[in-house]
Length: 439
Ligand code: NAD
Image 1 (cartoon, rainbow, N blue to C red):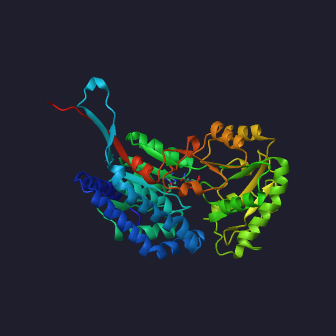
Image 2: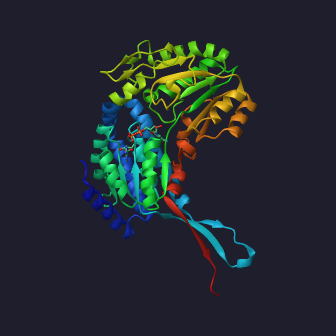
Image 3: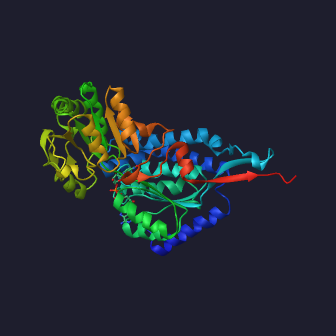
């Protein structure tokens, strides 16, 4: 159910009043909320999985792996470490303050925070930030994506049934509701989605001097070096790219390689698509659908770039776009002008390592960069000479499953990060404390 601006203002005011009572501060409250969220996921996971299937054609195993169980692991990791993360961290004190002075930092809750989620992993990308916000002792408003309506409705039903409704509120809706939310004062806004809306969020936040985390996207390149095992590379690229029909923020957006390697990689990619999705991917139960007609039309317009190696087919009524590999793609082609965010993998050729690195650094800083190379020098050069939110050697996507790694972008791919301890830092204020005894 959506709310009008007055109801939204009242919701935020109610959460703020509760926060000011101190209810969310005790660690016991935080862990109770995390256990309740965990129970929601384990007991009602099937309901969420069904919603994810309705919105994106996501198969049940994939819904559990990439959204439900993913969030359960995030909760377990947080529950295991929260006491340690919340322990005050001592800081060395300079001599001029005397030997009896001590200093430390402590993580303070921020207050009332807003989490705005997108449609592509509509449960995970709402719930994983919520885990961090609760662990840090905040009251939280969550706004699911209206483009994944079944998941939004399921979350709006399930979250209030399991969590403390005086401190966690779900506001459903699209632009009007989000605009009304952004007019309110929050203590932090955590936004996942595209850069255009990211700018709207940041402008609105500036009115209240509210800090923001922006988890955005962009074109994440995959460099494939000469002399690598192309069957292994193709298998990993295909699994990473076509998961959720390519609608993954850290999916390899395009392949960058030299012409000879490209020629050998083409049949390897075609074979890997057939191995993973069978001869007719339309019938593969684990192959997702495009979220809506607008994105379907956007994607099919990109199929004309370059030469089709495999795939290329589509069916608007079924919102199906085949896993597609395009070769001989001109860097000026439409498919190379925007984040693809769908099941289309272009191969762009470059002449050697210097040109590959220049190709990456000439463009916006990506959310992820993948390097498939056995050469230590090549690996080192990408690490030293390029900037990206994350860097994956040999395996796309997987860095974001390492709970102690921060997940986030840089430049156009975003600002700030989260997961595990990094979430606690994002949703806390690290207060500096000095103690000089009076006597
Ligand atoms: P989306 O359309 O669902 O929008 C995201 C949120 O913004 C929604 O909750 C929506 O209601 C809100 N919104 C839309 N227009 C708005 C407006 N004018 N004012 C205020 N709020 C508004 O999702 P999307 O943006 O299409 O998501 C895809 C993008 O997100 C891609 O670029 C992808 O790479 C990126 N993404 C990033 C991550 C990450 O973790 N870094 C994860 C997933 C997706």
